[in-house]
Amino acid sequence: MTTEAQREKWAAARKAQRAKATEDEKEFHMVNRAYLQKKSPTEYERLLNLQEEAKNEIWWMLRGHLRDVSDPSYLSLADGLQSLDAFVQQNGLLHTGYIPCEVSNGGIKTDLSINGRGVFYWAEGERYWQHTRLFTFLCGLSKPTEYFAKYGLICGIPDWRWTQYRKDVTNKAGQLDETLWRNLPVLDLQKYMGKDDASGDVDKNDGGEDVTRKF
Image (cartoon, rainbow, N blue to C red; front, side, top):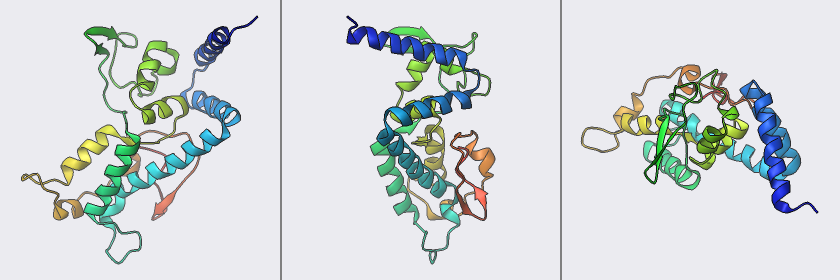
């Protein structure tokens, strides 16, 4: 008689086999999305809605300072950061910056490098999904990081962008500064956001520019 533990073991083995057979990151994400949509359509829909919430927050970081106070979509610096803080507190950050190749857990160091290199795991050409220990580590960093690693969905604010944004709008006295905020540069969205989310959707919130496909 097949036990639950055996079924779970076989399912994990099949999942690992699919990952090793998938050479392209986008393909890996789309296969996983299709599986999730079939297995749990409610969870799949929840993640898509969460991604839209995250994109709205990211869009405010990129374009909120350009809005006039008369614009219905205008949010002040204080109100925008309050919304951003609440979203981060509730959902966590998406860890897409530099991650050391050697991590310490309880004093035990684990080498998670790929081919001897441990820099940006999300870099093009790094098949992180084919490395079991590394993939498990990335999925354990936060829920948004797990969703991005598995499905390519942006369900959180990128950590390094979050940190830099707070610095950019805070003056030397440690206070939020409206002038600094209003004078933030008009960012190149493609360069700023950096990586395809593989969702295939486009949200043109400002002047026809696509603000959702990269972060």
